[in-house]
Length: 296
Image 1 (cartoon, rainbow, N blue to C red):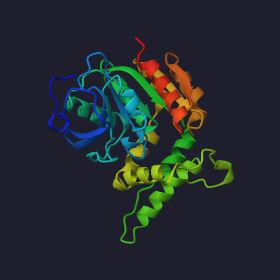
Image 2: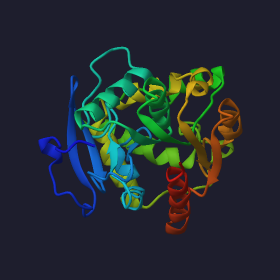
Image 3: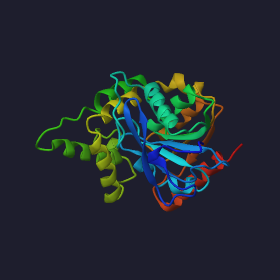
Image 4: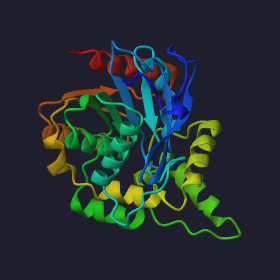
């Protein structure tokens, strides 16, 4: 951790009150992040967190205060999502996104760190750990898919279509429906009894907050999503050398892939979590993460 921080990060050397926000500068533009905790802690590595798609690091806010009691926590908005800049290349894949976010951490002066990623964020985190294993200590991959070739092709065609902007605002109706239906069906566009999820909808406040973040990235989030869907985890996950916790909530739509993903990483610790759907489950999941992060 550096003795000084960029201007956007400057604050007192103590536990921050709540979650703060800032920007890192990379060649493509600015990467937005939320952060909390001990900025100059010498006793613990920083924890970098990468969110699921679509949305932003706002979805990680419930996890951050507890994790930040012992370390500096930095939750990045991925490129093309939230308030981060869009990728400046037509070839977007997980390796490119990993490099971009590593460059953002370079700008913040973060050298070694632990890493958490969920869903798309887990893909990006995996590539970050593969690209720079000397920087990544502990790695938590939360909710990882392993699609068949047929599933991958179907999802690439239907899951994240481009959003058409028009003066009647139809884009907002589409994106709201997409966000809502992802909680009700898997996949979201297969609206039949056979594809019903049993989790129900989150509160109106949670759904609104997530939708607002997605609205910001209407032009860019589909490309990031498609890059995640195209990611070949079967050849990449075995390359990870960092100490890894592979986990998934039973209520996660990706839980069906958990055993197959675990087989790709026999060196990883594996845990089924209770997720974060209520306060009790959240605390149990956080306790599991803390126990792993404190291991030597």
